[in-house]
Length: 317
Image 1 (cartoon, rainbow, N blue to C red):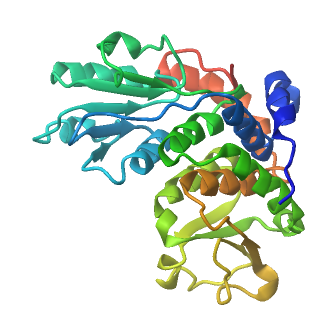
Image 2: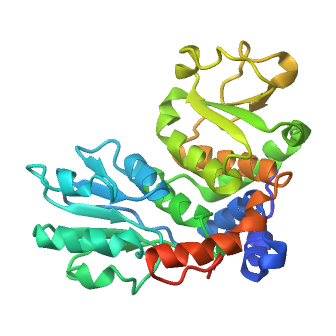
């Protein structure tokens, strides 16, 4: 396979210089994140807990389920933490937060009140959560690389954490996107406002991350469903409509008319890092035809700053 030139860091430098007037789409952000993660050292997550409580909000919660799906872990978010933290046998709490702010310090404070050891997985040193850490052990804090991105994109942040788990090679993912995905005819993406993403069953945990990204970028302006190739069989297509069925890694020969299908290949050894990068890349291509996010993010962050009682900017430096 031809090797794309990831070392030029073209997309990463574009992410470093954009303004509110020229916000890049998610697909550019994905390539920039892979360029960064190819250059920077990605920590390996090793914790001694046998029965951890893993806590995160939004995509951080979904990331936690991917990172610890093979452990005897309990998962929680800011809404059910009070109940889950009382579970017997918990020997440590893992907080996943890109910024270490917003709900993260509240969660950490609650963990300290219950005398639980805290591990923070984040991309920001000296965060608001840091004061709750012991700072005495190698597993107290894991700081991952991140690039400058629009608020909510969180591509390099959670992708880096997932690669720290799966140990996939960001350069190989980058090359597959450039040499395989970019060669596809993606023109169909611009003619639909309804999408059904079909993912392999082994990647069912990625479902929430794709759903959240559609919500963040399109709100209710774009309709979407994301299900596995097994779950789609259960009465999810009773009502027909003009929608594009996008299948990842498995060809769809049943759902939708042939002209309403798009197949996205995956590498044979694809893991969660690959599926999230390619999935986000395709969502970014949809975004290029529907700029709802760019028109609304500045206004939204002003309101979010009031909600969280802290300054939230439309660009995360």
